[in-house]
Amino acid sequence: MIFLKLFYEFFKTGMFAVGGGLATLPFLKNMAGVHPDWFTESMLLDMIAVSESTPGPIGVNMATYAGFQAAGVLGSIAATLGLVAPAFISMLLIVKILDTFKENRYLQAVFYGLRPAVTGLIAAAGVTVAAGSLLVLPYSGDVLSLFNLPAVGIFVVVFCLIRRFKIHPVWYLLLSAGVGVLFGYLPL
Image 1: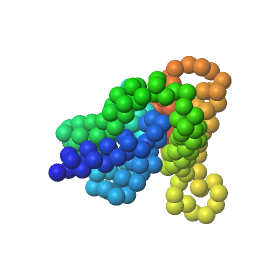
Image 2: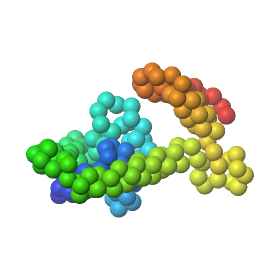
Image 3: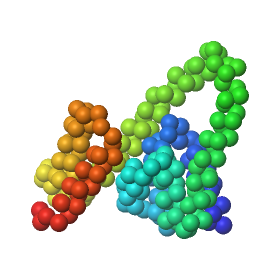
């Protein structure tokens, strides 16, 4: 029964997470609240880190990870299939229809409305990830204790490096992992 629930929940996520893997984050956050026995919001941050660090689409990686947390290997298969099934079905239909109606003004209006909505979903996910990674909640009252200063430092350095140097993201991930290990062994 849990496999059907996983498939169903991730199918719904796949149906409405327009815009790719990061757009699944608000759905996964909600899912953590509804099904805390599957994964918690804290585990969601770990899922994001693992999903960003492994090859493949982030949404699929997160579905696989969440499904595994909930019900092992079969759970990961059910969640992953649930997430990708709507895209697979939609693409089969869209490819056939889109070429025929690509000049249709109603279709163009739909895409005009979807683009900012997808941007909003991704931005909301980014804010959630940033808050979970960069803030210390609950905090003691002074402003500096609100921030995880080593994490903020890593964020600022990586952000500036990415804007300045166009190298593969895996190098930033490896650099950050190394700094994280270093901070993990240093008393702060």
